[in-house]
Length: 90
Image 1 (tube, helix red, strand yellow):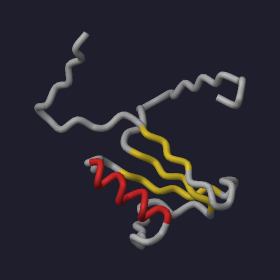
Image 2 (tube, one colour):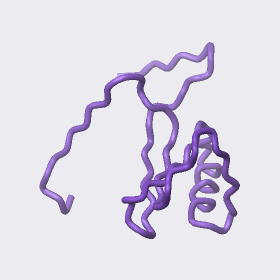
Image 3 (tube, helix red, strand yellow):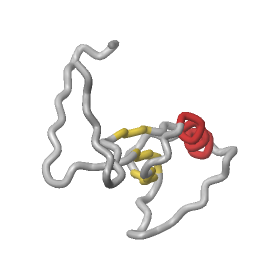
Image 4 (cartoon, one colour):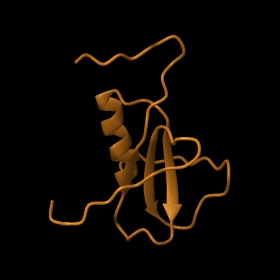
């Protein structure tokens, strides 16, 4: 780690789920849908998720303060389908 600072984040309220991709730009209006070209950087990331079998919720949000040319990927808890339980082996 090049940065010697340790950061801890706590989230209040309902936990976020799925994968959030953050890019530079003005925020989308609520409920907006976007088509992404496969050849674009976001499209390439989506293809990688498909190849890896990560097909859960994906969200794209634009932020005016995001550095130009930078894509941030936040991975949150993935929703579990009804009737499936997950147990951890020691």
